[in-house]
Image (cartoon, rainbow, N blue to C red; front, side, top):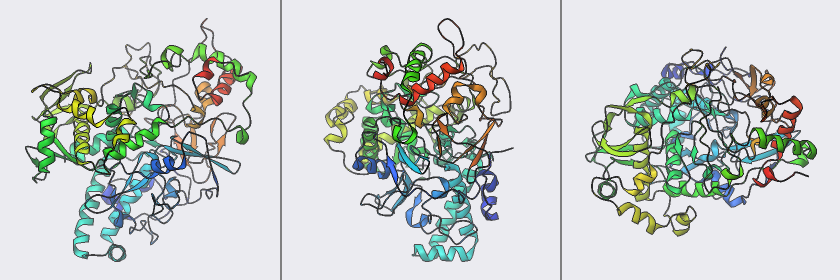
Length: 638
């Protein structure tokens, strides 16, 4: 049984399925046509964002270029004459956004127009994956920085089918061409090439098992995009079958590592730029690597920027990229001031103070140390999250992130090389290398070009200083180097991603089924154990979204083997989403499939070794409802 949508079927073009090489219906289905209409009024939680910052986060381009916007708005859905954008992508769970000067086309939250010297593109920004919304008895609550409920894979699959059908169906192409305008023959050639490349890429990257709403295999898709599509090495594209939940963003800037497998060092302005640059590559940021002055197609690279970059950063190839460093820095600044959402008592009902006080004491005894929520940890300027204790959760994401790839155009070039201990050296890139090393060179090269081309607007003093950086400091870091060594910016930025060693030797085999069908991985992975402020608003839970409620996290026997995803109605008792299988417009999450295992994180013991009772677990859950600030950890809730 694969994850499936409970909804009416809509015809999907056979041409689209043929190009993709996968069953479109098995991956996505036709969208959320049966989902109840969105509430007319959305209540904004107080998260320290004025409306100007919120709209900036929703609409600021970071350099993502999905496709030319005049194509996107002219495309029809497969098997239909309805425009692909007609419902503003609500069928995939993306949220509506009002028309404004920042959003003149009424694009959904997290979609932005990217305007450069060429055509205007439509792309995605952080908000598409990191803006949540929940409903309760007719009231809608926006959770900025929370996990989206969007079906990203479903959108990509239907978009692929739409492209393929537009190429193959003369009537559909003629309607498309009339909307786009210009030379029809040239348009047909360009569209056919784009659709073929898109279909080939996603046909290899998607292996037939759907991610479903609220999840994305970000690591695999970033690796695939850079090393497979951009480097033109098709064999580097591997199935993306380790989807994870979208992590919440508040307090992310304070962590010493991010990503579920803690592979991205974090905690300063350059490292924030590296993690966000990697994210752009995963959502269609364009990147063209240049070696010896030529790109992969043999064309000359931008001369002035390339020469300047080679002086500042002599140990990496030049990358000509669409990435907008000004956009990324503005988005990062918004995240640094984002506050966790407080429990909306007027909507869900008040927290039981007496029970929460019991839970506070138990939390500090049982949970705080693992989640680095002690006074010692939270008093640091950068919060530690690295935790080497295995939790026996699904290992698929952890294992897939360790893959090696062919370095393609980087083979034999002088490059930054990263050891398992985090050491940065300069050497010749081998023919095959860890994907994280290849990605890091691309990320740093993208940052260099982004800083030089200033795409997306000029950075002013405030843009730098908001993140603790000044133009003078940047210049000093860039030129303060000795020939043949790694300069300070490269050292600070890299590795942008690193290998985190497993937590072995394990005390026992994990009970999860791995992506290759093997039960009992001998090296149980370690995943991020971050502070839990505002955790009530971030379900489904565990790194792969395999548990629908916080109560299920605390009480493992309450975890369902299958549950519905894609309905936003909230359960304030068990804290999570209502998840009855069969709810119209939802997708069924089957925990028995590879990558979906819901085991682990279930051994809660007091200092004396005794297990917690159900009453004590309910008390911890009550405390987690109200937990938004460090003071609440150490101060009585009375």
